Length: 106
Image (spheres, rainbow, N blue to C red):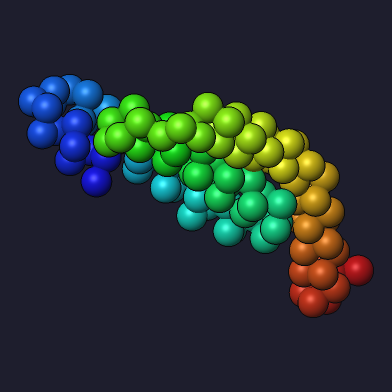
């Protein structure tokens, strides 16, 4: 939707950049599920929401809540990403210990 709106303005380079950015952000969102960390998944969701609000405000229609919405979701995402580091470390440590015992290595 956003990339199509940008492309309709005739700015092919910006449309390509927006499409590439959407792909990268979507990949980040999908990859967050591979961490097994609810905090990382929530952070990715907030980050995508932040960028979506920003994109709608810039390229589709002005939003009165854009600034507040972007700042709240962006900083919330950053906080959750930071908190997810220790959660991810605990998850991977637990997985390593469990796989060691399942494999019969002592």
